[in-house]
Image 1 (spheres, one colour):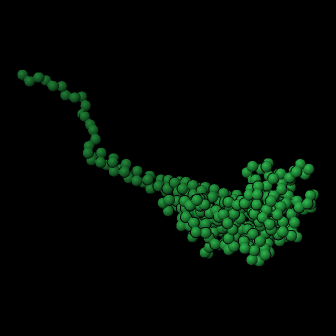
Image 2 (image 1 turned 120 degrees about the vertical axis):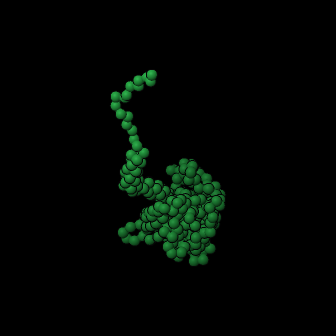
Image 3 (image 1 turned 135 degrees about the horizontal axis):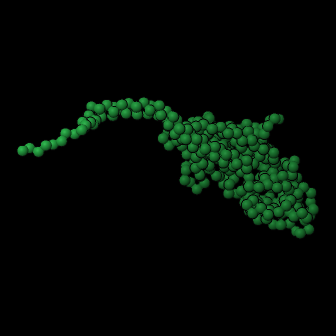
Length: 297
């Protein structure tokens, strides 16, 4: 006798294969639609981030250059290179001071009427550990950047050379000088013109000229230990002892330096235009920065 099997009280149900496929298709359509609307904002977000990073690099670069340029010897900034100018040069100063005009003792003032070998600076350099005047530094007086008063006239061809070299370490003047003064020995030289404010500038013997050169895809800072009479972009490669890379991935075709001399309304003005791209080449920014230069010698 066959045992009796009870029948289920309700019918079993589930997804068919067709229903499952339809759900997958619908979810795919919805996901694709959402992706289309979301792709634009997401791409814009990442693009903005890349541009912001490039802008930050460019801004840091031009501000670093601006701090460096403000150390320039008055009337020593010049540009060179193919159009647009891709090279900016200047003579950096390390410190400055005022020279004695009248003798307190024989020979302690700076004499502009004859060759001089020593003079007194008002004040003491020992109080400035990072700006002490050292042997082989250059003493520059009244640089106007014109014929007759030009620090770049290294051979004195026009009689306008206005600097000489410190011949030995400066020493404190005798205690009878009050306030304190410093005696600075120099190589025998006759300065062409006195300064209206009795001022002189000091250029480091190891850093007599600085050039910013756009070369390849790098912006380089090149340090020269000697002045050159004519403006020219120095041949430089990254990694050399006197060369440092200030910025990479630079668009040299979009980078330029323009120098405008002073007039009755403003000081001299340097306009820097710096173009930088990211490593993939998909993003690029161009930043313009202006630096006012006080050319009072």
